[in-house]
Length: 169
Image (cartoon, rainbow, N blue to C red; front, side, top):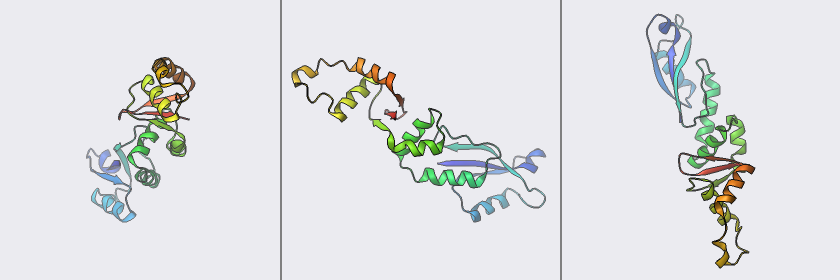
């Protein structure tokens, strides 16, 4: 989800906040209707963005961001499912751009229902069969806390608001 509050710059300069929330992506025709409603015409030609909302924390939108670029980003975000958005958001929290995050999203590991690195170590062991070659009666002696700590030193792990952990590879 991406929304911007589009504001008439001329009216704003005169002390009037004339604007409208716009859900992106938006077609050229619908955008023109919004511009007409907020009074963009020959007298008031300029507009700017005074506020925005988005699903991903790492997306920054400036006052004069290009609407075509924002539309393209919104289309890209619409093509992602909720799990992919969670991974992309986690990657972006580590300083990657949206484009880089989308490129890397399929190369990440997601560990579900993990609140700490010990949980991640347990999930990793289960997913990979790490302990399968160890007799079952000895598996309970494995130190998942220490293994998780070592994993955190060797990789980048981001805990999400949904109780998952994304390993950025």
